[in-house]
Every structure is written in structure tokens, then in C-alpha cells.
Length: 90
Length: 183
Ligand SMILES: [Zn+2]
Image (spheres, rainbow over the protein chains, first blue to last red):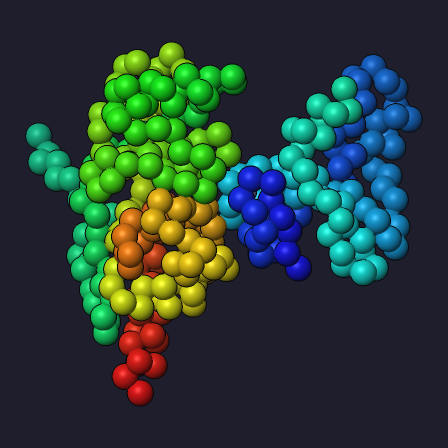
């Protein structure tokens, strides 16, 4: 598997550290209540198909990335800097 | 009072050679990481040019020459190697002295590319990785910075604590390449 870092270019998967669902970019406000926080901390979808995950280019430039990939076909569909993804959500 | 002696990271380990490939330590010098403040990238580049005659390198690039280089080492971060950083840089970025934190070696000679091909998951052949190109990548399991500094010469930087591992890994690959060439 190869992932294209927006900064470094196409690199071997072993340079990247998998962090988890990109839901971490959507942290609830402190006073959003127990249900929102319970959902944010504990509940994850586990789709056979397209997922959006955070990866860390640990063995490269050190950027945090959002990688969109398909868990069935192993296709990597898109990579973007997490900072860009977060700004786009604002 | 105790006598303090500077000891380089690869002291007692280098230089070594196998076949036509050599690995030597680059003498310790000043190393200063520079991270541009937000929106200050162009101004920092101008300040670097004015003070040290080298522009701020783009990602995956290095500027300068032996004795005075600026090497891109990560997102929004470069390493000034050699000169004492000018005070004029401080208005445009965060400067951190890293002089004793890194082991810096030079791998050179015909076949240096073949040695790195055994260790690094990035294509470093001259056709795609030219003089002035640099990468942050892995050498086996170690985080490194590799820069092409000559037609068949590379600068490799690893964390100082990994100096012995760095030498061991590169030496093993050098011997492997030399044995294959000899057979
Ligand atoms: Zn990267």
C-alpha cells in the first residue's frame, strides 16, 4: 500500500502511522453534553468500504493527514493535510 | 574540575569502506532548526539570502554547499548547517540549537545508491533524486534525513542516540553490495 503525502509525494505505507477515524477533527464543545461526548469517544462506524482516517507521516515530514480509502479494495482515494481538512470544515 | 572533551556521535565507528563505497563522519558543526512563523516563509527566505547567501529550500530540497547548507527536514522546518545563525532570522522564525542532537555522515562512492536501495523505501537514483534533493524517510526502522550532496555522495542525518545503529545498518548494506560486486 502506498500513500501520497501532499508534501513528500508518494511513499511506502511503512512511513505512516495509523491513528484512527478522522472524527478526531470534530471534537464536541466541552458543554455539548454526555451523549455527544460518549458518541465522540466510544462509537465508531466500521464500514466495509470508504473510510476517512487520520494518519501521521511519522517517517517523513511529520504532517497529519486525512486519508480516504476503501477497506474492501484497498484503494487510497484521497489524501489531504489534516490542517486543510479542518479549515475546510470551519 | 572534570575535564570535558567533545566526542562526536560516530567517534570510534568511522570511517569505514567496503568495495568502492565509503562512510565517514561529517565533522560536528553548528546545526540550527528553523521553523518559519505563520506567513513569514518568504520573509525568512529573504533574510536567509541576505545573511547567509542561501534561500529557504522548498520541501524535499536543500540549498547551499559543503560547510553551509539549509536542508528541508520536515513540515515547516529546515536545518541550517554550518554558519552561526544571524540575529536577523529571529524575527521570522523559531530557531533551536540542535548541534549535538544529530549524527551526520557522508556515504559516497560508486555504488552508494545501491547501498541506500537496500535500506530506504524511496527511489534515490540520480535520474529522480538529483543534487540538492533531500528526503525525510526511514533507513530500516530509523528516521533519517538524506540529501544528495554530490554525483555519488549523500549526507545522512540520524538522531545522535541512533549513531551506532546507523553505522551498523549502512555497514551491513555496504558489505552486501561489495560482496555482490566481487562475485
Ligand atoms: Zn510527508
